[in-house]
Image 1 (cartoon, rainbow, N blue to C red):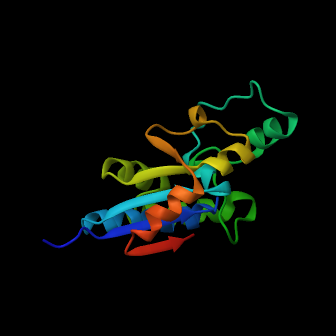
Image 2 (cartoon, helix red, strand yellow):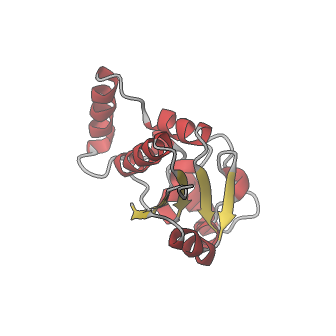
Image 3 (cartoon, rainbow, N blue to C red):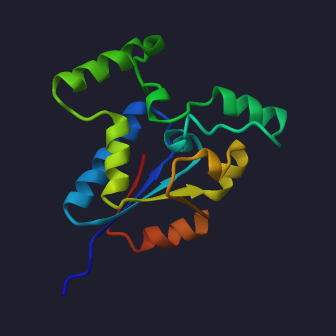
Length: 160
């Protein structure tokens, strides 16, 4: 019997289009029956922040400032290029809608529904001052060491 193929992604970027690329790859890999895991680090954590669950209690001044200013969830992420105060992102979203392409939120929900494993970098979570409770449901905390072990077992490993 053939070994199950595996895709391992690191999402370091907090940009809308880069997060979109990661989720398109993750969803496509699941359609090929590959096992998929995404390791969210630093700005990549912003994709899986739940905009309704931001907590400012028991945080330092810096953690509060970052928590209030960092993007909160998929629809709050900026475009990596030509954002133009959000106009570029709005144009991209309209072009996607015109082509009946799902938006970033739909790709995120689809990936979870298809069984993509979501992991948060423990150190990134601590440094950014976020908590697991501020994230979307069904994400797990993982150390960088554990992620590297996971990536060693992958057939494909990508950094975005």
